[in-house]
Length: 144
Image (cartoon, rainbow, N blue to C red):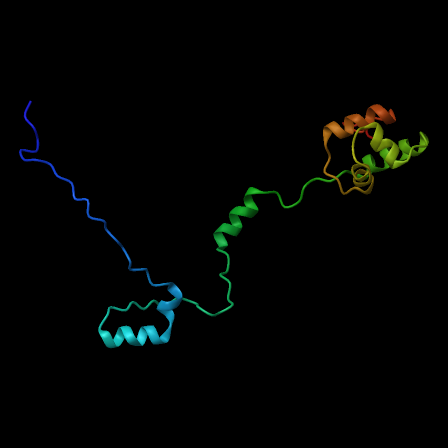
């Protein structure tokens, strides 16, 4: 099989030393360095930044805002007043505190407070647990 290199192959073992360091960005902005480069004839690049130094924030695009509003509902459904009152009435009839009810349904006390105040978004699993403990129907059409 013929060799690709017809002559003898030699390697250069001379060390290569690189001493030149890159100029730092801060040094390039220094007025003295810029003036020296201008005097020596070195190429200088100038960049004008748009809206540099102003505190203006870009206004959101109207179309993006409309898309966000269309994709997500404005307000989530909250617990109705009938369900709130039914939970509170059944809990008081059983002489339970909010903490006792929360402990029995394995939820935080804050969850029970939010359901009774009407701030919670209804969760069917939590309502089911409350129905079992309180013995009252909280889901469906017959909530009274």
